[in-house]
Image 1 (cartoon, protein in one colour):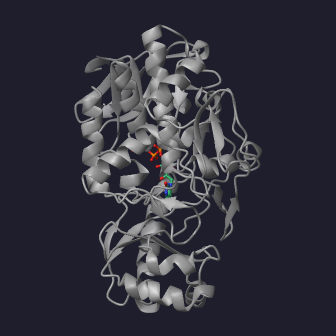
Image 2 (spheres, protein in one colour):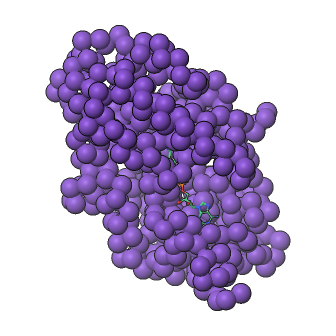
Image 3 (cartoon, rainbow, N blue to C red):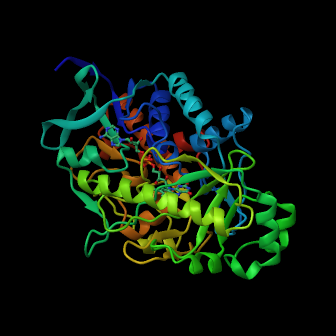
Length: 447
Ligand SMILES: Cc1cc2nc3c(=O)[nH]c(=O)nc-3n(C[C@H](O)[C@H](O)[C@H](O)COP(=O)(O)OP(=O)(O)OC[C@H]3O[C@@H](n4cnc5c(N)ncnc54)[C@H](O)[C@@H]3O)c2cc1C
């Protein structure tokens, strides 16, 4: 081993969850290290072009996600790199939050530095060491400087794939209960030279060709943020892609859109050969869809591909098996938990693992549901927390907790919990959850 780095809190994976977790842990005063395999932060947001962030609100417009997630938006706004929360013009949710990915990459690193976090990029964790059966002592990363051991007291798994949990032997879950099938992967891409005024005009003249919740009456006054439908055009094209509609979002440039339409099914995002095949299929589909849009959609006549994901977007792989597994019923009922550490108003949105559709279940009650602290705690590794996409949920409940603002919110909670546990010399299972909640609320979290 070349070198050992000592820390209190070790966060692995600098996606939306890991960035928030590391900022939060650093702010408690705990010595925090954040490890990321790529040369930039943002995870799916930047590597896979996921955009816009959705949503900070319930379907009737009440904001339910704040804290570091909101702070990031406000800092982006101050830099002119986000319009903030704006109405979703396909009507699927109340608001979406566009942002400039290149500014976000730089801003997040600034925020990590301000919180005193040591950031290690180009570092892939491939081994976990344990001191006792139920405790992780260190993780080993592979880098250009060789293999480095990072020792810590509390570990936060924000790899999206529960890599740290898996490598430590912690109980993990994957995909659907019956067959472990996961939601499809999607290669996202951007197009420029799109005439969005022409698109909007077509929507106003042909409302029946768009998602039924599209707020057509308000459309003339709203900046176009999202378009879902063009059902007739898509059906007629008969492309070999198991998808039922056109879906794109506008920005970040004024003539640019982000297209979310490719669909790669039946492959496992934790298997090397499957990932290789997914990248190949996804990129071929991008060329097909771009060609279709240019030839068939009004406003796209001069459009060109401006960016394709550095990697395919992965919606679902492994999750930790936590002290509590959040279920679909909890979400749909808008159930409240005493150990709530984050809320979300995004509906369950499961892209079918095998079919061409998306299964949606709306949140009842006040329009938001709670995420309990127990869903962040590993069932059998005492000093391990998860945040983001790999917290403990059922396949169905993941259909909502996986969205970026929720990942930022669970990251904020996990980082704060990890920092407090270290500073108080407490085991995670003995942490005073009311104290954690109070700390989160003081930092703007909405519980
Ligand atoms: C196709 C698609 C469309 C989506 N659409 C939207 C949308 O419109 N709006 C929205 O808000 N959300 C959307 N999402 C959901 C959202 O993007 C992700 O669920 C979210 O980014 C998950 O955040 P995370 O931090 O948990 O994980 P990730 O974003 O996956 O980040 C994990 C990070 O860990 C790193 N990592 C992984 N393993 C290791 C390792 N072993 N060592 C070191 N580093 C490692 C990765 O490089 C990455 O940076 C979409 C997702 C996909 C795939």
